[in-house]
Length: 536
Image (cartoon, rainbow, N blue to C red; front, side, top):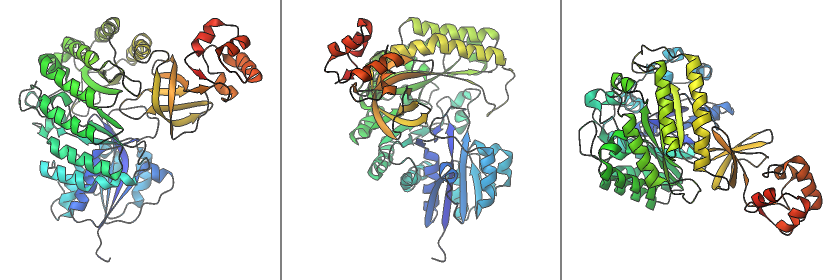
């Protein structure tokens, strides 16, 4: 068609506290841009990820090319990486038509070459431009938001990870209940104003569309506090609305997703309203998949830093929240992980920080450990000056020492408590071969990194028997483990076996039972450890 309007979306992957988009995730932001383009009259919308370009895919001509990329929270990735500035520089000459860019990549020197650099909402700006209006900076309306998520849903089928292990993130609201106080010093969410809530009906409609397309895994993210979803309270610490949360998650559960996980929670809300919060947590634990993590924005246990940065909760409130989440969500689910656990964010470099701040943070984590509580993950990072500059210069030696102490004293203990020896983790999706080690994760938010000390086929799920713990990952072996069929390298990975004993087992196979093995290996302790692992 001569007058066909074509739009190409380049997904360089977004990764920030309000949107996960690095594979296996696909962000709601890129889907909303697709929906906005269709709503504005695009006849053809093509989705291209940076991984597709890395594999040699050509960027087609288009009337409009939109690039979304950038990670405001530095992370370690297994499956892929966000687009680099070098890659952005290399692809720019190949982009045709109007060229727009958004995400934190819009703050780079390379972005200056684009026709439009969008800081607020690329979907809204692209829509206005295609509709003949000025390409300015604005946020979408609620009606646009819901309409664009439905119209843009189909691009999930163009993602390289569709249908498995793709995780589609779904947003429930934007903004922050603490908007009237200015919010936390480092966060821009409060600057978006009063929370704009999507109704359970609208979120469920988007989820159903994604499920009908073949999406099997979702994460309900993008909100500052899922416990506050649907609250009619306009105060900075709102009273939760358990009925709205139950309606949302019971509806999602009924759709038959393989994985349903969530995002952030405000500890101050849980601490201030324990009765309502418990009901909310019970709904999430009941209807979501195990391994679910509520990221709690503690940031620091130093009360001076809390005050100077207008942070949302004190360490006492965080401890209240950790206790309740453990109590409600600590039971093990079908995949082998606890149903619901807290995560902790610690940010270094905030105003008011001193050397003693690190000691307070470590003492807090020790208290959690010594109480027998569990934390799924502790995210430690330096503050990024996204909202403003900070007057503290982080001592890199002190920062590094603090991270090492947390890894050595806290993380390993948490892993042992969370997945003790013999835990069976089901459906660990293997993603990477590194020498003789295969790495994988269960699908979902903040999944445990699992290393199997022998080669397995990747892009396949396996059940894993947990045998050892590192500081940030665990080691295990495939389960069930047929000792008569597994190769020598796999036998070496069995607890207490090693190379010599593995070679002996190979020579003396087949075995009918443990008594047969005990005649080959005269070590009752080792035989006992094999009891729950091996099959014949």
